[in-house]
Each structure stands twice: as C-alpha cells, then as structure tokens.
Image (cartoon, rainbow, N blue to C red; front, side, top):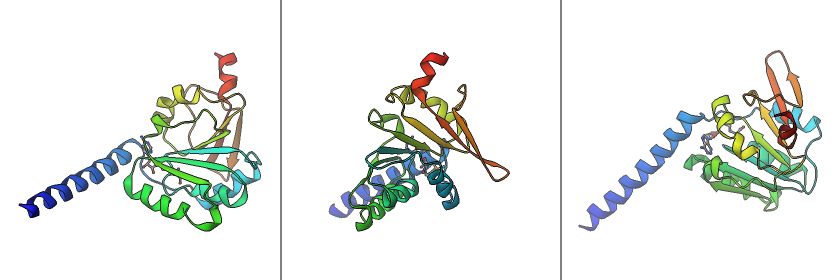
Length: 180
Ligand SMILES: C[S@@+](CC[C@H](N)C(=O)[O-])C[C@H]1O[C@@H](n2cnc3c(N)ncnc32)[C@H](O)[C@@H]1O
C-alpha cells in the first residue's frame, strides 16, 4: 500500500517535471546567451548600481549572474523549467552574488516588473508579442534589452549589431504610448 502511494507520488512528480520541460521547450527552447554577448551588453553601460533587473525565461540565469557580480543590483529571474530553476537557484546562492539574485519558478506572464529598470529577454518573437501587455506596465524610462529578436510591431530605440548576424534591440516601452 505505502509502496503504491510512493510510486504514485514519484509518477506525478515525473509528469510535472516532463510537462514543464515540454511547455518551456514548445514555447521557447532553452538556449543560453553566449558570454561574449553579455560582454557586449556590459559595454552599453545601461546597467548601474542599485537598479532592479529582471530576466524573463531566465534559464541558468547567466545574465543575472553576470551583472550581479559586477553591480550592486536586485536581480529577479522567472523560469518555467524545474531543472533550470533548480540549477539557477543553486548557482545564485554562491557567496559572490551576496543574495542579490532571486529565481522564481513562475511563468514570465506572472512576472512582477513594475519596479524593473531593465528587463532582459532572449525569447522568440511570438513570445515577445505575447508579453507586450506586460511590457506596457514598465515604469517611465525602464528599458528592455532583447537579444536576437525584435518585439513585433515596435521600433527599437537602439539596435546594436554584433558581428555579422547577431543584434541587440533596446526598447523603452514608456515611449510607446506616444508612438501609438
Ligand atoms: C532562449 S532561452 C534563454 C535563457 C536565458 N534567458 C539566457 O539568455 O541564457 C528561453 C528560456 O525561456 C524559458 N521559458 C519558456 N517559456 C517560459 C514561460 N512561459 N515562463 C518562463 N520561462 C519560460 C525556457 O525554459 C528557456 O529557459
């Protein structure tokens, strides 16, 4: 009897993990931002001490960890895939980050972004389009850094070419109201 209950619990956990993995994979597969792109973002000098940065679909939180090591910031990651949440949570606990990184096992649609100064995304256009209502809640002057993909329907304030094929797009959603 106890064996059957334990087996059922294990099966449910496995189904939740596989389901979450598949969900993340179907919507936006996990592909980490390369380190040299993070260095390019650093050169833009957009991220400063005492800012709040948010990574939507944070994967292993490489963006948050890169800047938490360099700046005194509050860093929040939202990730749907349990293994990546576990990995990034463990990495974020390293002493060098001084407790500044907070990873949440939550869909990015439920992210709290109202205090964000910077949102970082490496997401497909379909996901970016579906996040426009969330972006519209960002505070005055807050910026989105989108790696590799544009937000459909909106002109970036700045486009940075990296090498021959890669781009960073910078958006300021508070400027959108005057554009539309
Ligand atoms: C292309 S990866 C980028 C990972 C990380 N931001 C980076 O740049 O290294 C996209 C991530 O979004 C996650 N993801 C997909 N759908 C999601 C959702 N609805 N909510 C939160 N994360 C999601 C995937 O699991 C994956 O880790």
